[in-house]
Image 1 (cartoon, rainbow, N blue to C red):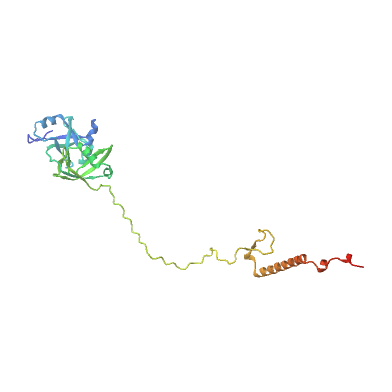
Image 2 (image 1 turned 90 degrees about the vertical axis):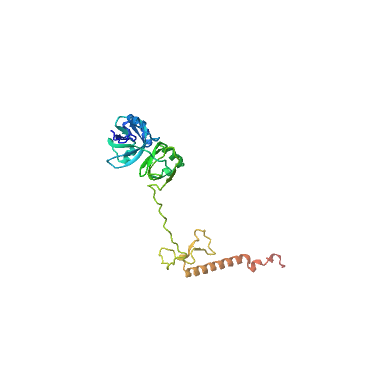
Length: 284
């Protein structure tokens, strides 16, 4: 299906399908489409720049993007487009799209916004980006591209590109910049803790009935004349009154005096017993 008005240009309408209809999984790794062989015959007769770049547009979504070409093996009147490109432009299977040859300037600067912060956490982001972008021919401002790395999909929004809104990135050295990922969240600021240098004023302590009060002269006592065992001689001082202590003291002193008197009789016997019995030796 052709709408060519200028013999030196190429503009064709094709029915678009996703790669799931053919065995071409590598089609999802870049921005290239598969076109019919008849398109190659027409393009070969034109004076065009290589690598070939195309403008893709639809009447249904009024979206415009750009792409390259991978192969010319599709059926007549059909093209195959990466699924992520179809979603980006709002294209469904069997939708009619317009493919037009385009001449794009070399890219000098692009600014990307990752959808997730995972890609920026890789050890060598620049090397990974250079390797994955080799599968792309061109970039368009406002598009969302998909890069594959370690079997993971990474999506990026094209925030800025120079020197035009659509640029060619094939065999060019351009500067790449990143902005904050879409899933980035500002860390919560810790709330300041205000501490006072003065010690808090404490009120009077309330009496607590459960607390043990001070009791003077607590413990156990023992008398001097007590000859009982240590266990039996223990006296609870809390149950002993002052009268009991005085009486017990008098009894102990009298007991000691009795012992002293008995001992004095043993030490100092009576004088009569000390006199020598000399009656046997007296003279008659």
